[in-house]
Image 1 (cartoon, rainbow, N blue to C red):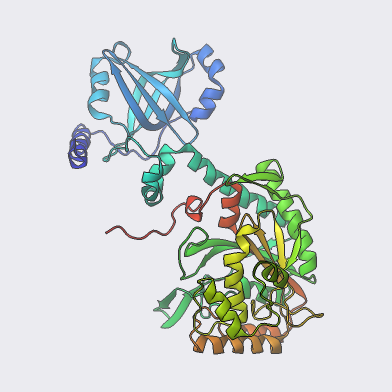
Image 2: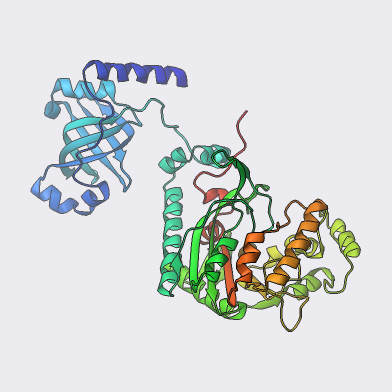
Length: 487
């Protein structure tokens, strides 16, 4: 039977229910137990023959003459229900067979018992329609051939693949443990604007919109950074935010246009102290979530046990490519990039080109947690320079399993230097580098009032979840990833 015929048949059943003045979409259920709890308390409930009410979606219907078995499930589990004509009466039994389909939500009243095969079952004494479904559930919903449809129709993916639901439950646990750790260490959770008059805090192209009420253009934020640092100026000492950011960039296993970031800022410390805190944070969260500091990711064992190696960005690049980033001229660096098949955008500087080479040649080989430190000046316009070497930044990135998880640094709090950095970025923007950071006069003014020494930390929540749930791509751990529209 075609999909349209099935839907037409179910619409007839829906009309029949309404004609009988039966509401096929009641507002609530009278259920007394979740299925998981009913199964957990099965012995006691079955012994007492206590009447209970369960509810859930029908997954299968098997008719055997005067009796019918169904499997149905709620958000906690599945169970079998047993319909007998001699218990329900011919009229009610026939009503069930004529009006209920796989995919419908049902409420059943009855008592628990075990079948001869030992399966936990509820014998139905009464039942009620909770939701009449109009489309049938797919018979098969697994395998690579369905991977695109799984992402497009995540609701079906969750119905048929319990491991997918568990992955998203794990995501929630990870975020909960992050909050718990930060709050235990004295951080305050705050919220900052998603719509911003100037986008900043990262090198990325924004999404632009227009606010009719004030007749102004606004941007979806690409980072949480600049407003959080304004709060450090305002007197907060330890703050964090977990929130959505938006970047108008390519989509691949590492990137989705909207994604979840954690950023926190800590006054009066530097990047070195932040590295120690980062190790402790990961140690605590990974142990809570995985029960071990060793995890498996894509058939590789990753050990989060601190201390982690610290590798200079320039040393790593030189080891893998023979490029001396401190001395090479930008034109020579461009030629090296071209040899590797890397496309150079208009206006990109040495730091941006070096970063592209590093990502192509170096990053994927880093499996165990590693701090890549001291990127070249220009890489992060909001980071302090090293006092001992002004050509390098007081920063680190955390790389795990080839993923860049964390970007962090001692925050630049010199308003004169910050203006100079923004001006350099503006030049690059005018030369064609669309990801350059923009001049933010309001932020510079905030710095002129004085920001204490401060270290900041940014982490992609989605990437951490991918690692801790052994997901190859961000699409697997974002409930509704951005997809190309079907034609």
